[in-house]
Image (cartoon, rainbow, N blue to C red; front, side, top):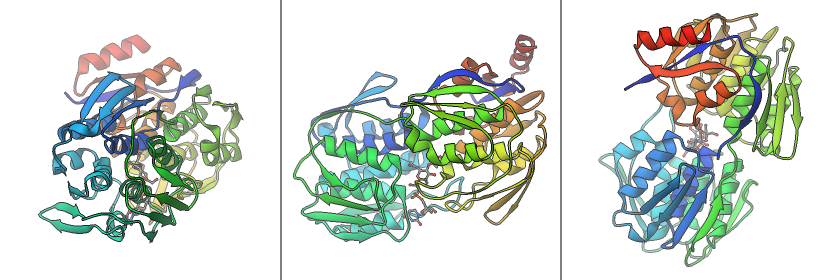
Length: 433
Ligand code: EPZ
């Protein structure tokens, strides 16, 4: 049954929220976990749809997956009996393609369906394939599948033409058991790259330089068991920071690494939000009208594209004219039309959104076009006067664990209800009136 969120806006978020493990680190780490025949224990796993779908794909190739609790899993790759990932898995979760690097690196062979385009724009994987070829793999694309094989993989100097999170992780996976030394130049530097590298190192890999643009990998002959806890999710944290600011609230966001949030904290401070940093928490509060600014999304440590819709929503409520330039994905402004139904004034020209701040928003029935845009619409709903319903929340559930529960604990009026359930709507309205 399809669900939707119903929100009554206008309540400042106040209190404490605890951030879960980083989805985009977890996706790489789960794929890496199959590369040893020994048992690996992974903790601080976010319990979100993308993770659960990838675990299904891993089970599907024969690996043993034991979910000890929602945030802890044990994986044993010794029982893998298939190196094929079909289109069904890739369609549900693009990051299944990390199994290409992992299987190729472990078995010198992998067949994975070619991912298509997606809701945020064209997403080529040429850099991943270029990396595999450089390591000595033959890569053929036939009948919608990427077929890769090699007699053996041999380390190489690889220069990425674009800074790509996915290609950096996939090449690291393929190279960690290749013969000799691999260097990835122009590598992505995101915290989740560092986390995947740290996890591989905890299994015995020899990867240096993750977090810089030059990653050096000395191949090892085997990987072994490990117990590992995933870093906190920078984007979940950033989303709550923006939600706190937008609702003029006061929220302590716990279990974060403040250094990973600097681009977000910096912009929030610049427009007038108060951001206080602690060792593993940030406190975000705001009680006055915020100012305008210019933002351009960039690879880490620049402002993350995964925070672009949320910050644009905040700027839509700030004074003056702001601009937001999206330089990573070409189709990440699809939420703008939905937001305009709530009273924003945003014009998109090419990859730039020109935002005229308005004083207030009004509730409306809207649809989440993708994961982060969906989160941004929730923030708009929390601010808006009256009721907002948001459809297609399965996108939001791909990356936010118990989003409505965490918001409710901060004082929001927000509930997940079945679509087209008028009685549930009435019940919610009665409860919050
Ligand atoms: C990762 O996607 C994240 N996904 C995305 O998070 C995130 O938006 C993105 O990085 C950018 O930070 C995961 O980690 C699973 P890229 P990825 O390869 O790896 C171009 C979310 O909301 N490119 O860094 O697919 C590409 O078109 C999601 O959690 C090539 O040209 O992104 C884009 O313009 C959505 N050729 C740019 O590079 C390639 O071979 C960066 O993409 C690969 C990428």
